[in-house]
Image (cartoon, rainbow, N blue to C red; front, side, top):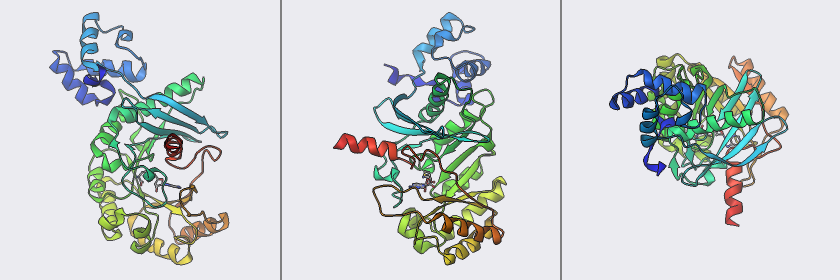
Length: 353
Ligand code: SAH
């Protein structure tokens, strides 16, 4: 029955307040419920002890508190936690917790499968089935926090990166609802500056994102310094080539004042030459962006290989010397299925065999 009910985790504070007024309540009810849901993390309406018994019945009639369930789990020796979650319709999605000095970042999946078809990515092996609902993205965070509690850890999720499977800007409205709920000071209160959305480069949505009026971060999967190389590995570049993508990023920067991170996967022989570094420097200079070099995470489904550490450091130095801000991404979970979509891909493969 609960399918017909509204999942309360899918509502922003404003949306919940409007619904409470519709039920003849004062708007403060929404904050009260938020506090139970996100500060006290209850799992039933009956635990909301300062809500009258009769109104709890009304809530139970109209809303449910369904969350994804844990299907399988992997914990790496470096503390990285990877959960394969099952959604109400049986679909499986991955969510990952990575430990940094500054906090714990959850890598949230935004879609079941992905239509971007990037040549190097394991996620895109499985085409998009559907976008995730806001409550299914928030659910990843709540389930991860409960998992930490069950492990008797004091750590909680403090940062969000929407960099799991899927193209978040292909599921824009649900992603923004999720972010607003996670960011609400009456909810999970994850600071906007602690939230990053990564896109393959959906230009109109980059512009829209800049106008949201939140101090949230944008990461753009660039991966190539020119259209020729980018066309080979990212089909989206045909719709939104660099002549459209770079101006959109600059407009985003002008609008939001937030510096953009360009992700640049390093693949041997494809985008790691000196000439590529020079082109990349020219491309990025005017954008105020910084570059996150990602040593390619090899997957068994393709023949792309990671350059040597020397090559990666040489490339990095070249960017720094040209005055570009650049970092090399720290790797997590090397002893578990680290690359995006690998855990789910393996599950689907095993199921098929
Ligand atoms: N669709 C969005 C977000 C999901 S992918 C995007 O394209 O940004 C998150 C990041 O992981 C992207 O930068 C993607 O290019 C990168 N990625 C995918 N497969 C990878 C692999 N095997 N090794 C390293 N990075 C990978």
